[in-house]
Length: 78
Image 1 (cartoon, rainbow, N blue to C red):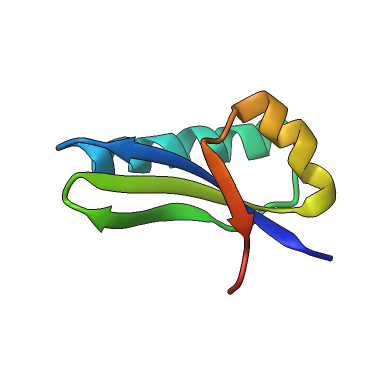
Image 2 (cartoon, one colour):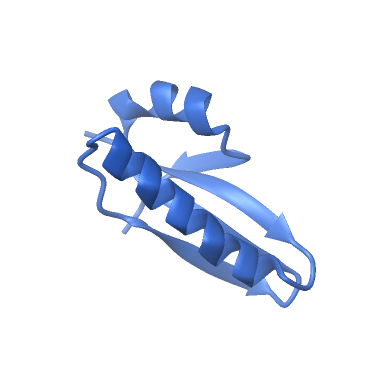
């Protein structure tokens, strides 16, 4: 089964802190909906760009996309 990486981009001087905070909300969503999702996190691209992400199974994507409105997504490759 394919896995997809849903991504929320944050830009500006506090992008990394904002991305870290967003992961808290992603984990709350996972817990609230009792989802079997284990991979979340942040990646820092530069001082002014970081993103939060969640890795989901392809069949889960439409519901989560509609609920959480990620900015973009890509095929997950560990």
